[in-house]
Image (spheres, rainbow, N blue to C red):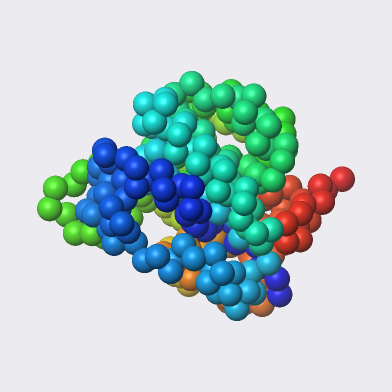
Length: 306
């Protein structure tokens, strides 16, 4: 069964070199990553070796891997020129990756170039990634409206990924991924619903990383607190990254199977090869990701659904 993995990270050489040229966070010293909100992290060079990644993906049955800029670095929210240099390096390197990889576009939070975004989305980029940190309140989705409209008009999805964490003092290294990332995604999920996002963007497809921080599981609490639980939106997807049988079972009970999509977060985790039975595995690893991207995919190409 050929899988489509919507959530991977792979740093091409131009992007790595730009990070090494910086003197303020985020930056690389050799392969040690320094960011503002998390402890220094020793990156494994092998994790960003293209040939090795291809071998791992093919061993896992992954036909297409969608790779994105690592939003927790906080690059999108840097001052305009700083953000642009790093994002341009990401786009340049991503376009040189083998056809097995399909990149998500990124753009600066400050004065995003909508014409450039439209140009990127008209080519090889499968959609645009937005950091959840910019979407944690209804006003954040409203501020991103022009970007969302471009994606909707181009028929490309928006990938909501955790952004940069706030410094947490002496907290352990797992604190940001377990606590802050999940909280960001939950807030972004509820903010989308609170702002009436679907009414404003009736054809937009969204993909939330990491099961939207399990926000859908809290719909019972929404109802208990006076909110209204609407029908499951077939164009708002959640990926499987960071969760196993318990988390995915809870998501499936809340949302059904049709909006759960494979996202491994590789190199930080492995793609799940079996999810809630054979039919569910086929749907989550293959059918649903293709629908989330709006087409029938083969390595390096996409045939639009009529």
